[in-house]
Length: 247
Image (tube, rainbow, N blue to C red; front, side, top):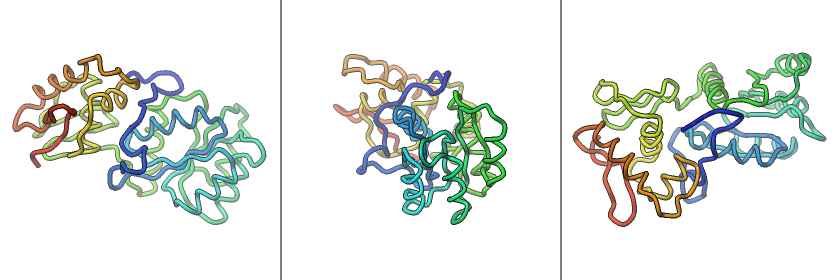
């Protein structure tokens, strides 16, 4: 998956994005707060792809209400919002909670960042930002706070390091391409669930094929060969693929 610019391509509907599809157990809960509705939507999809359980708010008051209701592990909080801005939300938050807070800011003024840090923000990222850097900082903040960062995935003897983007099976490094790694990561996040070809394409490539492409089958085939045996990825005839079998 190419990851340049402010955000990488929105991965479309993912497991965990709808009420009937739950995020993996232990997923860090993240509250994203920004008045830019389009940015929040793209960022939420990107973070869900990375395994975070995401709630969104577009105003300071909505953010404070979500804090009380959801008790997130980390808040991504934009400084420059109308009415109650991020500094005001942070000040109010610190009166009642020690939740981890990472500020998002397009402002270059040092005093805004200093004010946020003085009020107890854990870190900040300036816009435009690269989503890989943002996720790395989020995981670092969560680790410092003793929270699960979900930067590794495992199933049986398969291990994925999401930060280093390395995959091992039985202790041996697998030479996966970037796309193969993303397909495997998605399957490992939701083992034993059946994923249609279209759903996998939306999740990894970021758009719908319309059912006319076999690109998912090609990459799954390569991935199966590189994983070796015993097999882990099975075809569900007429539907798609699932990760099961061992462990």
